[in-house]
Length: 158
Image 1 (cartoon, one colour):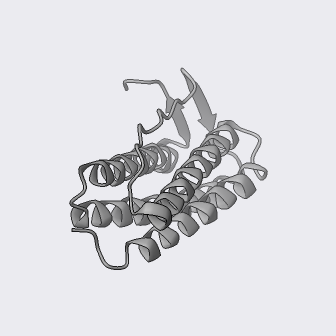
Image 2 (cartoon, rainbow, N blue to C red):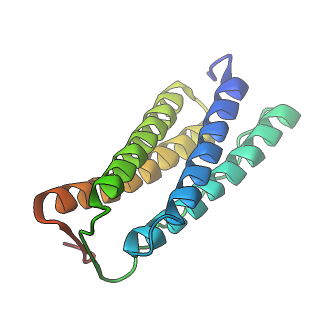
């Protein structure tokens, strides 16, 4: 079973992706550190989600079919270190705001996945929720590290 307002829900989460992509693009311009690179990558990723949801919306409108979604790998640089600066407080505030966006998106996709009987549609929303969770996790590590040590070190696998 598909929720009766599936198209409305897709349009809402698509709009949320546009808001998130714009948020990250705007905030990336405010920083000249590793956070800038991270936010540019997150903006690009959310833009990717927006495009895929636009494809899904068109397919659902045309013939009621879900699209195949393979997901996208989020790749951070192999290693970096970001040291606290006088703008640390505003940087942490921006990261916390970004975490809220990611958690909201993750919850919305998980809720949609739970309502979709179509296997392809269900898997798409599960993957979208997982991708948003990974974004949240990366931002949470940044926030925790900056708050506790004043430094955010990223080394994959650690």
